[in-house]
Length: 417
Image 1 (cartoon, one colour):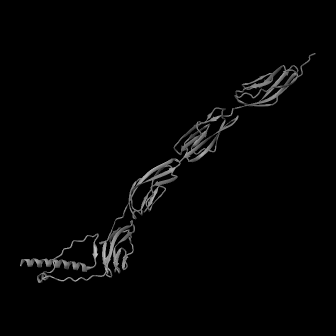
Image 2 (image 1 turned 135 degrees about the vertical axis):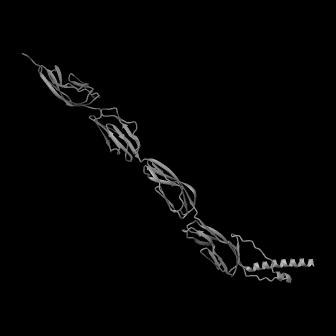
Image 3 (image 1 turned 180 degrees about the horizontal axis):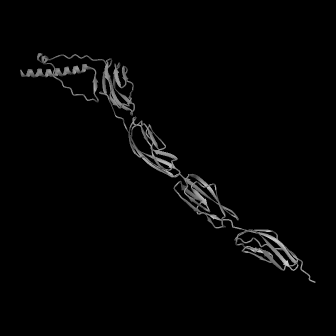
């Protein structure tokens, strides 16, 4: 008669192990026995590399990946055997990503990006990026390469590295700038005539598109600036001045300069006399300005303060009959039009009533027959000359000269006798 050992039984606390390649099992997996004593053990198929089996215990550090495999663990004695099915999965370690810098500032169509992510963890099965990279940048197998073809404001992009062990991610920031504008003007020196020349000059623009424009100093009246374009008709004179223009965008600034000179339009304006001595209650001859303006000019005349009572000011002409005496007074005559204002100073004095003077004639007959001596008067200058509107003063002066001349002649004749 043979007496056999009762067949053993074997079980474990779990029927599934999920391990990670290169990482030790958190704790050994021990068998729970029942029945008779176990004489031997068997595992089919062989456990993955790095895992050990001894006396029903599974332990160790797997060194290879493995999809889920079912292992049949048997406990055997002479009475029979007990079996337990254990599922083991060995995963790839999660990737560990790193990058030298996580900020990248590129210029559209200019800067090339060449980035490789460092991985010190498990092998990556698949890669992902979110959101999509700007056009021109290519993502694949842990690299970002290419030259961006569009602008992109600063944005954060997440890179995912996936494998059986899970997913790792890292964030980077990318900013794609507009190329700096490159502006210039074909002509940089301009000479205009105030009120006449229409002015327009546009920049030559290369590189990126400007977002904003600036200029300094302030432009003369009549000239405007918009998006790099100067235009308009000047309304004031300007000595040669340099204007600086900035074209700005995310890529930087570009600078250009122009020089602008605005000249006074050609004209002539004056009065033949600027000091007037008038008599109250006597008409004065018309004092008309002598002037020439360009054909496009339309002069406007004003006078300040108002002329004395009785005098009329119209289109630069002064005429009329003064009614009241006044001392020498300054009047500013201003002409405006397509040119800047120009002012002429006119001085006016108004005398009172005439004074009749009688001078006795002491000449002898010979002097009377000879008449008065010839008197030569200097040519008056155009400026600072007076209208002598009271001819009696001139007549008196002539007669006095003649009287003195004749008196001296009579005295000379007496002495000779």
